[in-house]
Image (cartoon, rainbow, N blue to C red; front, side):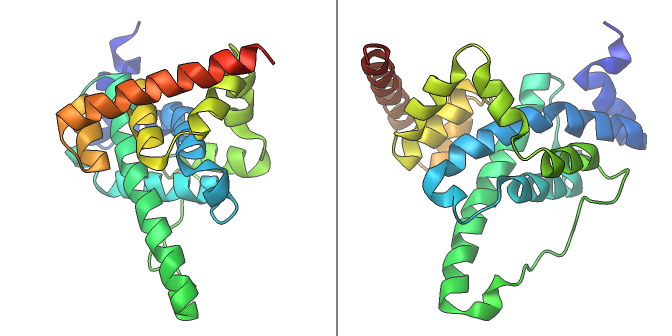
Length: 208
């Protein structure tokens, strides 16, 4: 593989001012982060939140703090984006609650947009807005993931966040613990319980 095409190479070029490299980084990660957000939000919140909007917010935040990304692996970059996405989801939930109490709060404080061509992730955002079935639907149809996603969606929110971050976004146990605001020991227990519960639902579903 050409060294300059790896995440490390793209990061180096992006930090040197190569906008095409930065675009490539975000576009390569878009489908996985979109998949994470779809599963993370769950059906109840999806009725109130647009997943593509959350992806756009994630990319905007990541763009602004891009220099903080230090790793050089594809999985590390996706994990970093998913941790930012988690903060975006939490802020969106708070914002929705504030909007109920005060209609003026429904106005976005962040007026940023990625719709302009050339901005990191702009191509992916535009594609997802046009293609509302999105890569999530396509990804679900691959390797029987539809049943797995349905099983994960039955978990409570903290367990769902934990299992998605750990096994989909490749976050470390410590990163997951920070995201769900508990200890590494408790996180391991939550993950073990989530794996058992997901397995149980899958087994029951296979007999239907």
